[in-house]
Amino acid sequence: MPLTDQRVAIIGAGLAGLACGARLGEGGVAVSLFDKARGPGGRMSVRRIATPLGEAAFDHGAQYFTVRGASFRDQVARWAADGVVAPWPAAGPEAWVGVPGMNAPVRALAAGRDVAWGSQVEALARDGAGWRLRAGEGPGERFDAVVLAVPAEQAAVLLRGHDPALAAAASASTSQPCWTVMAAFDRRLDLLPDVLRDAGPLGWAARNGSKPGRGPIEAWVLQAGPDWSRDHLEDPAEAVCAALLAALAEAAGGPLPAPVAVSAHRWRYARSAAGTDTALWSAATGLGCCGDWLTGPRVEGAWDSGVALAERMLAGVAGG
Image (cartoon, rainbow, N blue to C red; front, side, top):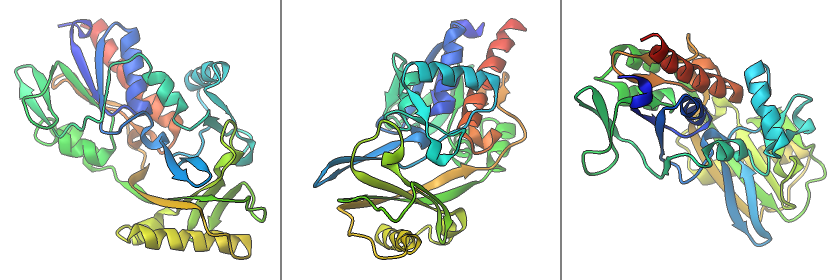
């Protein structure tokens, strides 16, 4: 059966999954996406927290992205023309961010697409030549092919028992964790630059408001380095907040004002390792994988992987 006559499910509606879905859609394929999150973002998510000063927004995942390849450069140019992305000089001359939040490009890709948010797929089940997605009770929807656009660790669980080669590739990839603290203050922290790198346990810290299109609240994103995050992975959130705020105070050279709001998020699968292939597709099982765990921990890598998988699937149609 030609792919254009099939239903394709994509599990994971981050940048890789949406890039794959967009390209498949251009090729005339019916695509449905499923994501456990409440809205667009993935590792480009934005967290909003109520404070006495109003709502503060934090880019608590990927902080910015760069552009190397021609395909992604063309896409970023389209986003820039639409006001979806803009340069962020504080992070470097080639740094780009979503506007008004890092999830803006993902939100733009998701617009008008068949995306089921808040839908966590727990298992795959064979149904003849196709697949059923199990998300809670009931047999689940049936699809002819399934794309896994989730972290390798999650993909390995879903693939186990269905495609040994893909499951082995996913199992061989590991991601580094990252503790992230979001803190809002009632005044500007004048002793600190907009961006800090490698300051004690902090691998990265940034004044979120220095990015274009952000609000006026002094909001900071503090991300621990991978070693510190791994060593403190199971620490309580309160202890993580205290440790990273202390590191920020040390970088400032003095005490900080008490934050008006503070929260922590533990990314268990934050920074992926590069795989050996840009995307994985098995025509025999109708299963595929895409994501930055195949290309390396870059936003552009996620895009490239999603597009590459779609091209392979479409090429399979052309090649009979």
